[in-house]
Structures are given as C-alpha cells and as structure tokens.
Image (tube, rainbow over all chains, first blue to last red; front, side):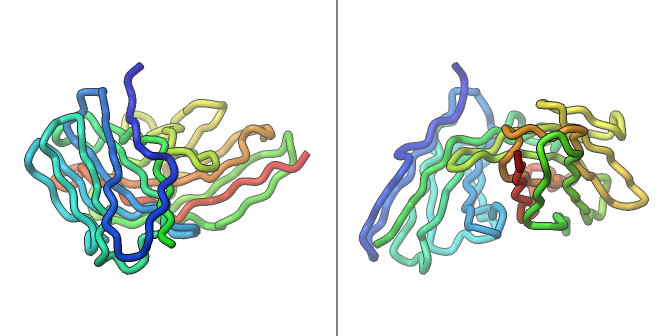
Length: 115
Length: 115
C-alpha cells in the first residue's frame, strides 16, 4: 500500500539531546513537509521541500534541521536549540511541484516528549 | 498573507443532530480550501476540498461544505451526526498562484458527539 510512514510513534529524550524523526513516503510525491502540532495551536509549518537537495524554512524553523537526499525521505532533526520540543510532529507529502489544488497526505505522526 | 479562523474550538452535538463547523478565510487571491479530520494520536485525513469547480463540495463520511466568496467562508456540515464523527477538524487554505505549495491551517475544532 502507498503511504507515508513515520517512526517511531513515541519518542522520549533527555533535555539537551538531538533527536531525528524519520519520514518516508512511497507515493512518488515531489513535495514533503514537516509540521508541529500543539494543543489548541493547529499545525505550524517547520520546513518543506519541493525537490531533492532543496528545502525551505517554514514559520517555526528555529531549533530544527532537515535534509532531502532522496525523494522518498525527509528526516527532521530536533536540536538542543529548540526551547520547547515536546509536541506531536506530522510529516506530509504532496504530488506536484506547484498547484495548490493538490492536497497534502499526512503520516501517522511522532509524539516527542523531552524529559 | 492568508489566514484561517475556525469559530469555536469545541462543538458538542447529540447523535443524529446537525453538525456545523465554521471556517472563515483570508486570502489575497482566489483560494483553494480544505477540510481535514484527525482522530486521537493519528495523522490528518482529507475530508473534502474546494478547487473552484463547484461551490458545494461533497466529501467522505457524509460531510459537505459550501464556498461563499461574499462571506469568505467554507463551513463544514453533516445532516446527522454519528458517534464515529467525534474527532478534531481542521480547515486549511492554499492560495492559487505562486505560493500555492503551502497550507495555512486553522487552530481546529474538537467535535464531541453525545449519545
């Protein structure tokens, strides 16, 4: 089945440690996105990538980093510079380089808790 | 800049009653509009989307939404609520044109269905 996988589903880390969240898609989509979700805040865009080896900052990129070495993979690293990393992280992908008509497909999410 | 306002962070209805979830948008160009649903600890699933083909859009699970340009609204309705409709619902806007690769989300409305 085609879709987006995120791993792990739950992740616990100590304060000050970097952590990498995995996102893989087999939909052959061009664009990929990372969002952060906090209760009552909706979804906020962290980073997005429209093609391999290129990505852009979203609205809340500080303290995060990404890479896009392969079309199907878009890992997110939460660094120690992120002041409040505990949140639910969602990865999404979309067909096409342009055209807002195409919806984004979402993965199941990773819940990160920093102790 | 585009924005989305969802009136009511929490809506409670009885099983069998009408569901009405409100969404107003702001966009400098004709928008594309989306409604997503999220069940607890899961990713988002597309309910329906408006792409200018028809102002009344039918989606999955019996939901529909009507685009009203004069009111800048895209409210979500379902004639008869079912217990399985209990979830959080997000309205999102994407601009047609140069910036159409990004979605801007509302803060969400949590729907509770009472037996």
